Image (cartoon, rainbow, N blue to C red; front, side):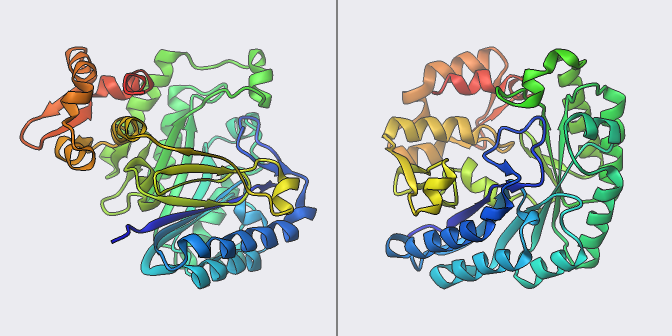
Length: 373
């Protein structure tokens, strides 16, 4: 019996490029939207031959700024997906929304299309910080979008935050957390700012004051405590949810499930093969799609089982590893596990037969994950 699929749909258009963003997105190319939606619809239809009829448990429409394009286009995409796939009645269907680009009419349309989860990009509740990172909304815009979403019936909302922003201190981030938890969204994502080569902030980093590494960790630990006190459990390094509202779509990635990505640059994993679409929009519009594919070896899959699963607060299962790969975890990674346990980065729970990152391990998770590559 085949497992359910998760589907990702990439909408690469933005009103403007944020100063920290290195995602595959474009500002000022709205003239391509109609052609892009047609190519996207064709790609979904063409996937029928190999995957048609598969059951879908989650759909995530991301970007870019999906809420920038006409709502009818979002409806067209979801209609095409339902023509090709069997979408579960209880499927989690998410769309990313930027404040100011989704009014009440657009949000009501999303609801009518069966979208049942919104991810709203706040990033900071401080207008000065938003301006520094090139966001085109302010706190008031976010609040209007959030209130409209509630009035339209959305009862599963994520709010995206970024900390360690230029000019930010611990008190400012505390106020953002207080503001967001006061609104009571079902889910909060909080990521540490990463300077990515080629972005405005990378090129102009010396023009800003940045939190140091200790301050970054202080903000993270404070955020974990504050969100826990407000009823949000950390279920993954950067993701926090009220009970029952963990993001089902993202959990598919962390648990090694199968997913298909549609759109420019979208990645997929199915049948033990990882493949990715072209990042050149002119190629994509001509129907040229897959640009690279890799058949994963068992060693690759074992590695991903370890470093993706350890991102989750409930850790990884020794029994699950044995069932999937026919080898014990210690046969393959005994030395690495012993080293991490000795250094206080991983803890073992013999009763549950599971491994977990410690708090220290969360702090230097990339170092831990590298041991299993």
